[in-house]
Image (tube, rainbow, N blue to C red; front, side):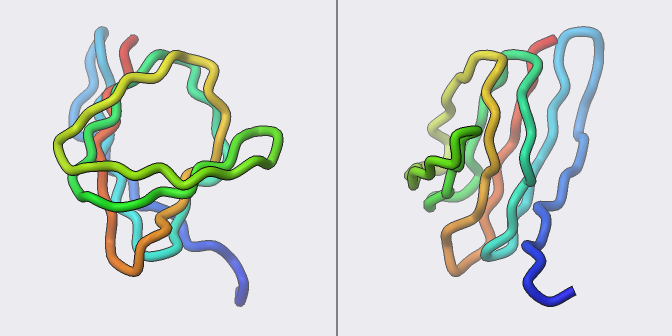
Length: 97
C-alpha cells in the first residue's frame, strides 16, 4: 500500500430535508479524494491552517483557512482537498439541500 494518500475521516453529524452536516478530520497529508459538489455548501474551519486544493484541470492552490471564518461555495465545484499542514486539520461542511 505504500504511496497511497491517506483519506480524511468523515463523520455525518446531522442530516434532514434541508441540510447535511459533515465533519472532516485530516491527518497530515490526508485528502478527500476527487469529488464534485452537487449542492451549494458552507465550510466552517475548526482549525487554522493550509489546505491544498486541486481543481479538475490539475491546478493546485494553497488556501489559508482561519478557525471560525466560514465561507460559501456554489454547487459544481470539482476538486481534491489535501491537508498541507504538519498537524491534524478539521472543518465542518454544511451542504444545503
